[in-house]
Image 1 (cartoon, rainbow, N blue to C red):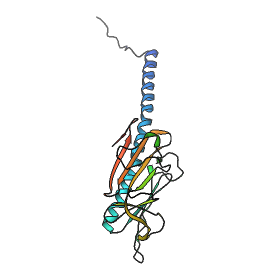
Image 2 (image 1 turned 180 degrees about the vertical axis):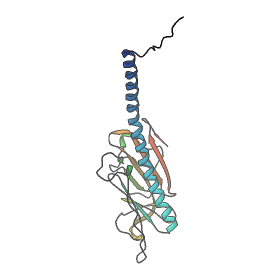
Image 3 (image 1 turned 135 degrees about the horizontal axis):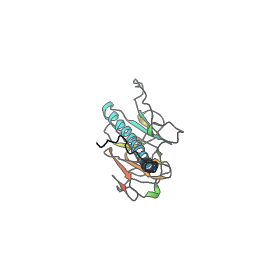
Image 4 (image 1 turned 60 degrees about the vertical axis):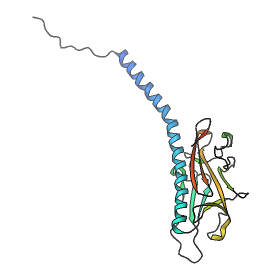
Length: 213
């Protein structure tokens, strides 16, 4: 009678080494591919933070019937302020927002960036060259250091200091373009524009050759 063998063939050392080499190679490729993805996600989050604050300011201006100022503080801070009338109760201050939730001085974050080397945005009327990364152009000519959403939802140029309605530099609509990204990383370049007369917000991303909506 033939006896059954209880022995089973295992893996050789060479086979195990080959499997480990394949696993390590695939892991390294995954890590390499994840780095750009992580940067792009953070760039998108920074862009979305700007959009959220701009839309918040516009909604507050319309709902509260008060002008609402938006200031962009280098390198990565956005501050929204409701401009109350003199003598009326002042609401709770709106906390500043930092791109990628990082405070000033933290390096692992998107910043307001100048991407002049990447060329102009496809929509006319929005410049791309101010060193601060924030371009405010009054449609009647000239520039302003800050922007304010009026009670109609339009965007106008304004002085940033103070809290009164008299701070408005003019009632002329201003186009706004905000550029964000990581220094020396064009792949993280993002742009946000606001049409002054309507308050319409649009976003763009740099795809390596063109700004795409």
